[in-house]
Image (cartoon, rainbow, N blue to C red; front, top):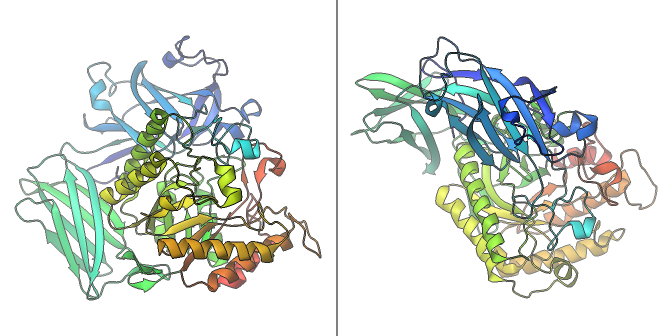
Length: 594
């Protein structure tokens, strides 16, 4: 799933803009054949989430219909034309000229349709075509992420409304770009780039998948005035570049080489593709994460794609601002909590030198129900891993894949309160081990992990490379007693390290904070309490040689579901407000990390 690219061989036509939209509150659109044209439409921006745009859809998570028209340019040759959606949340059904062409389940990752199959049905190259998309975002226990869960539920703890099994709002809509693009008849399908260091020199391995086996392969690696050319032998699609004294990619020097891949037929170039690549390695040895064979400490945040205007819709100005604010704080990393972010966000991370933990949307997983239903969710998680790695495998910024955030062990509340060591149903352990094995089978060049909640069984941590834990001592537990909170945190992490012998990072810690609320003594929700909690956690981490990272929860306040625990429908643990104004904590972290 290479990013769309326009060059002399490839065409591109964006379809973003103002579309027609109609919420289907009574779910009558299919019976009334809205796929032939939606009635009484209102304008909507694509990409965006419908929840932030209309008064009657603020909390609506059902069905909505989108419509636009498109024509193909006369300059485009026939064939090899594809329609691509970068993300639709949660389930998309697509019609062109009244013909159903595709359905895709799962947000945050792209899917596409070849239009070649439609040529015999409608001459789509010859006239204005009508594109209709039905978007459905209902919450269901068998979806990933799940909702309307009656057992193993976060809702039992927080009283979420809507009934998500996670703590952020279930935004709906066509939330990333839509486009048409065309590749040549003989074309590059995929490219996989891996880098390694041997005695200080780089080995860059490039594997190319083309639509035709009878082609020749070559690459060019450009760095300033230096140009290295390599060609494959005997039409092998595997090429290696050996680079002396490479300029390595890292947070202080995010150097990117320009790699151009060519395929030739009868000595003529028929397609090419450009990638910006970084030469770097990532591994774990003993208690350390090594980037380019040097220890690295992860300092940063969990984040959310969240805006009071676009919702979870792609927002490029905000992405650029967020990356600049991350640099301002002195952060060097973040996790794509709790779903894959846009391609553009990762391109910014590549250029800015951020270390990224890429995560699938497996938040709120539970294992209390029927084993067949557990297997349904497993299948969807495996699909998401496949799609995520397929899309993001060439980004040097990504150093770890996370297969889940806070999967809930059975009897969660008791395990949280009693620190039970009892083994759990092995089906849950096998579930996570299957996802970890899938990651390693698809990409052995990065680390694998997941974010563990309080009460996570030890056997779930056996196969990860780095133990990530979300811990809220001092907030949900031992609030107003930070010394006791840190003591319990220390005891628990010492125990985890003794058992696992793996490096540990705290992937979430923090306190809800209302901006402008102050007190001279300890008081929950004040800016002073947030700073003191963060300080004690960071001090604690410095005292433990097995700690490899600290990610504050969260970068900025974000919209979540209604509950008595969420003032104004926001999770307020951000060190920035939702509109990116710094709280005291942001200034504290800047002074600490800089």
